[in-house]
Image (cartoon, rainbow, N blue to C red; front, side):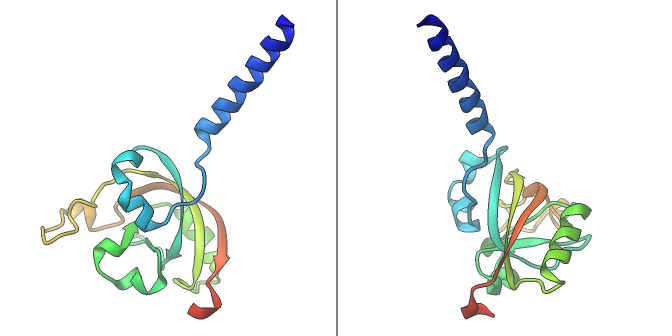
Length: 146
């Protein structure tokens, strides 16, 4: 009986470690915005429409029309050539028309300057609000948006 309980304890401990590193279901920009204080420093999955990623800019939004909208409708994705190349190749360079899922560390940086305050220079070029992005998958845009 003790051996069985020890084995069960080990299995439960391994499952707990696995769940602790699991980033769970992808979150939208709106969901991240509403829970940002709880998410700072955490690795999360993000789902949304991504605009063209280049050296100075890469953003994700819940709706492809928001990619050029007011700053509170999108978030900046940190610089990663590997991420940019994956998004480009997986979307056929048709930016903003596909929903993608990626993983990143939420830093919360540069969100506090989205009102009428002047944005610091560090937030001008590819701020890492969503740092160290890793591409997971692409989802085609819903037919109503194509």
